[in-house]
Image 1 (tube, helix red, strand yellow):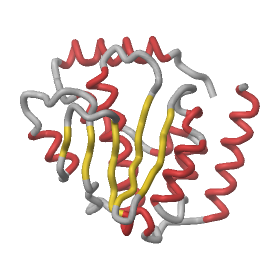
Image 2 (cartoon, rainbow, N blue to C red; image 1 turned 30 degrees about the horizontal axis):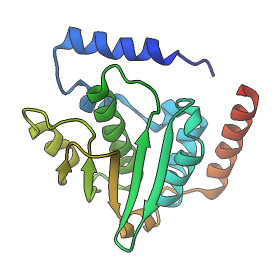
Image 3 (tube, rainbow, N blue to C red; image 1 turned 45 degrees about the vertical axis):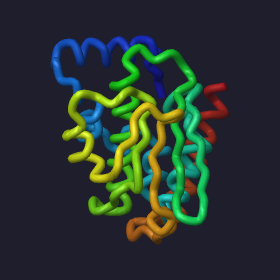
Length: 185
């Protein structure tokens, strides 16, 4: 249950970027991220009945990941919008934004299947010189210089019943998250 101060975590990102020299460091971080790294919230994610319920949990309990993290959900007849806002000054905004969107996409593919393709990905950052790796990873239209950081999915994808769902396990882990948040305040 220990937390690493965000400033230290961001400095770690900066150092990793500096040492690796890899401008796609943030995108590539997804391959090393697992829902289980989020503890009970990650296990509740894995047991969710649909992407909709998984994102609702993520939105409700985002403070487990970062105290000021805001995950806003919206939808229309066609699309489901997942907006992410860390609500803090970001030292390496491209790394953080690439990481957030790639990890959300990877976590979604873990429970909904690797064939899941977002409808669109929106970045606040300016378009990088090369977007080849972005397209290779996300496999969908990308927009840069947007107002918000956002993953956009098709409604039918977020409402599809997930084969690995387990309502009891999801609720049990959600209860653990609630207890954790109650004791951390």
